[in-house]
Image (cartoon, rainbow, N blue to C red; front, side, top):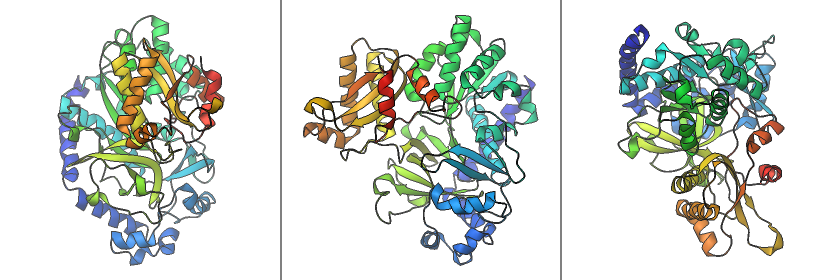
Length: 502
């Protein structure tokens, strides 16, 4: 009770601080921009790109091109070799190791300046929830964070580990007694063994806040229910808050609420190894402008945006926060106080509000289907399957979509949907029709291709129970921060999933 009392007071103070900079977004970003350039002026990267001559954003764009990891890799290898003052002053305190696709393992620098923001953002999200709702009871109970191993490789140069593992070392002391699972359980590498251990450890506790990627929390809930034979809300009657990130929760929401047995509040986060970009600051969503996550403009990150439709053109237009528009799908470009400069993180966002600036994550710039020029994005397939599920009463556990460009028997090409149902629709044909109609509504190019007999209606493949888990296990990515891509423009995932369909 004492913790929750003081949490409410503190939450009001933090909320006022947050909305102070949120109400002055352009000046806030200007200050971040100039502080970044000043701090990195004498680095190797700053010297190579004449930071001392950059006076404003327009000159910055001329001197610093947009890069992905491959474009910064030579600089990062110099840091890994022990060189100082390369991308940022001094040396990083950590490398967050992530699995890349084209680059193999990626080593994302985390500096002593950037690390505090990774911690503060998640704390702020919870405090803004308390400030808005007055609900602070969760701080008096247990909290669980489903994440990767906290073990860190401590070599002679720079400590290296997963971001979730690095962050685990910075849990405030006042939360240590409330936090689960135990350190020993969190270090278990095998995901299924780890979740089994978490179930045993938590089933007797007063769990009030649960956090993680929805698909893996779903696995935890299923194991809890099998263990106790009760809904999650019966096992944890004080569980009232679910915190998540990494994927859109909406396709999972109905199934998760069925497992829980009731509705609970949820907070969406947008963290990454490269920085903590946004969090949900509103529970009460009276208008579209209340939806989405508050973009963190005061966290040592300068944001740029490129319209996704123009991204692959020569010299696409780069804009700052003051020129963005509502509803446009943008590629997110960042410059950070850990030494990432005009760095393409691969995520796409759209703004739901410009006062304050709120975003939704619409997908990945490399995760789309455009085998015939339709350029279908993650947001469109997620909203379509959510629509069809609501009408049919189906519950979706997991899904992904790929094009079938060369079908057998001379039939027209189509989009192939691999879906693992928790609860199948009564009529799969009607479900497919609703799904296809909504896809046509979401994407006018897709509509035109069907009308012009270039494509036929989408086809659904039912993935067997736990089939997606089997696939993720087969590629060594079961659990942790790993997630299945919603859609692909090739058949790499689809061809493997064909062995797992009913």
